[in-house]
Length: 88
Image (cartoon, rainbow, N blue to C red; front, side, top):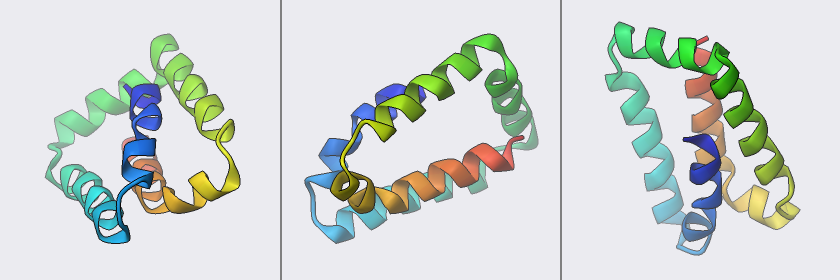
């Protein structure tokens, strides 16, 4: 779930700034539309062995990217991390 999203970031990084902001806004909008049950379920998944493994894989994938890539994708990553902390 997360690692494929991180691997998909080059597509976002390759588009103009407006599209990157739209992608970040999509993540934020989805988070706001999640029901309490959706948040509970996602939080439980992130606490499971499979969820923790996926977070570790996504983190390693993201950290392997160069600083320019991380800078360009920061708005999307910020929203993903906000979603992550919201469901904890």
